[in-house]
Amino acid sequence: MKYSNFGLAAVLVASSLLPMAAKAQTVSLAGGETQVVLASSFVSALGSLGVTPGSVGLAHLYKGVAKFPITVGLANLSQPKVEIGHLGGLSLTAGKTVVNLLNFEIEVVDSTPVITGIVTVNGSIVDRLPLFNITGIGNIYQPYKEALSIQDVTLTLTSGAATALNGVFGTTALTGGFSIGTASTYTFLFGEACK
Image (cartoon, rainbow, N blue to C red; front, side):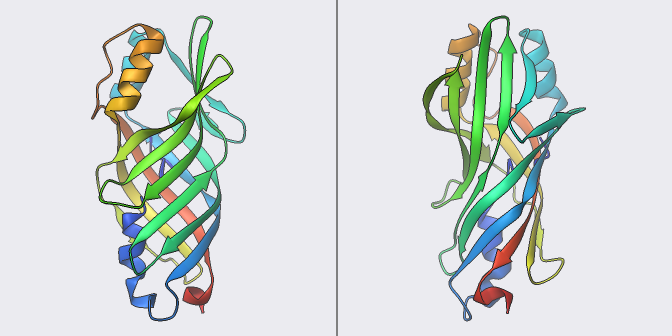
């Protein structure tokens, strides 16, 4: 997924904005999107299991590229800590079984950056779970002072998500560390750091 994140990858946010910390420790983030280019190996694995991926809500999936609109987020530049929220999600459908992965959150609050999401199975909420590890550090830059761009972040499936999906679809094919895709995020900054 070359996600707009899927994110998506906030440890990077902090490092790119540290010079601004003297002006403001925390900036607000809003708007934009995370785009994820799904790994061909992930798409093939789903196909071999008879699972069809799709988009939910305001997300879009077309020719292996998923896009998720960003709602709001925060970046604490002195920590660094970052959270970025998204709308919509992905659906995984096999026969009458539909798993939705919804409302992704890029969370960089400790040494293990991760993307969490709300998981539902056939319309019933399971929980908000860590879904994708952020395993690569991409390129972060500001095309202009009010915008933040995070490029080429690698996403892999968490062990917990692999176990949960295997259980729902009755397989052992998915494992922790399985490549999901490459994510990129473009969002906007608000606050003192933009002045």
